Length: 248
Image (cartoon, rainbow, N blue to C red; front, top):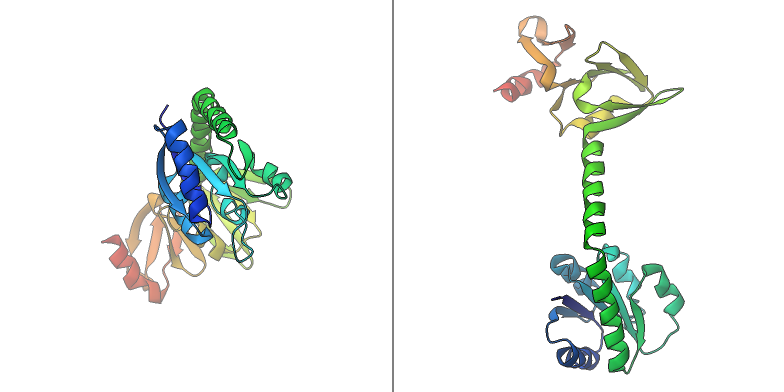
């Protein structure tokens, strides 16, 4: 099983020592990168996405490797801590490491840690794929629906079922394609920010429409939009030309 690894340590000699051990024990492990400071480590880990992370615990300038892990998706990687002392071992448990090795590195302990990482990666590919599939489904569902909080309930509504939204002070009336109206205590600006990337357009300060239900536009009397449910939506004077350009 070919693995990739990334080493983070503020001491170049320690990096070279670890690389030397790995080259002897595991010549098939590719060291894709190394870093001696937090910011560089964060950027490279996100970019390279290695299988294994070898992390020194404490850096200069009072920096600790946990700062790195808190800014990357650390559960994606198999982590092996490498430290000159064990004072951070309890804190390290939070990140579910494979092992916590003390310097100077014992080759046998290093081999045990790497073999454990390899065993876990060989055992979990199906489970990991299932988890990724579930995440994709959740994201897909989240992208399709919004949750509307009324006074006595929370209603899941598909974005595509919303015909238009009308402001009513600090409240908003959501009109659905089944002729149902839902009133929520959220202003229309929040819905505009939430839905603008999903074919919704705000032709008036008090109205937000789903362009999937647009029927036709009348230029008379300042301009009005007619939706497929028969509703008439005004277009503000300052938005009229913009809307005409939008239709083009």
